[in-house]
Length: 211
Image (cartoon, rainbow, N blue to C red; front, side, top):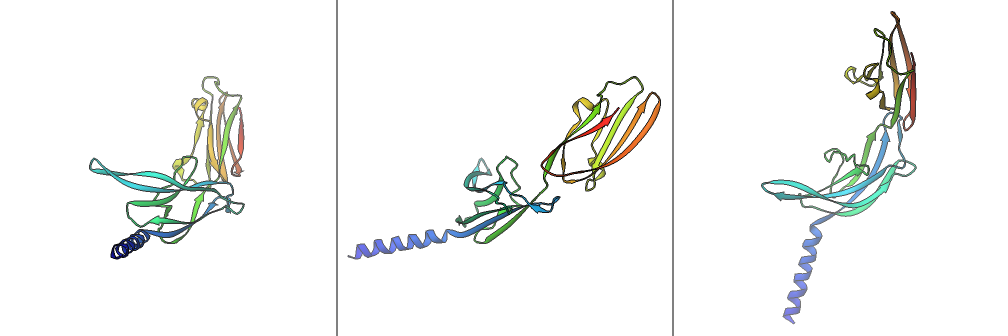
């Protein structure tokens, strides 16, 4: 009878100890497009756990998927609750499915808390700048296009010339107002054109520069 009591106590203590190793954690993620100032539906997110592994005097993490969800019509992915290991060797974070994993330090999940995480993104569009007709041009002639968004710093200005056109006229742009500066030398005559264009997100655009 005493043996049964001891076994029961051991099982109880084991249960108590194991319970203390984990804590209830809740995760809700909102994906917000900063440029459009709206939440983004249909973004596929993954909730990961990483376990630290010490190897050859250094450490790295091995990762396992806990759950995955798409943001709903309101741009929210509610992962609900799960039990997270308290051990500091375990980390939890949210990442995009498409391989653009977010930095753990920015979107880490705090264990034992109600996590309401906002991921700020900018919707991306495809822009092709066409020279019509394309180079080559006559000797001494040239076409140069520079453009930048209203939120871009000076050093981010894409520049396209007739000599770089073949490999440098397709870009990704973000929800923003863009300013184009076009310099053209044709038959010894210089022309400068300035233009302003607004680009929405998640679209495909073409900007034509007439030679």
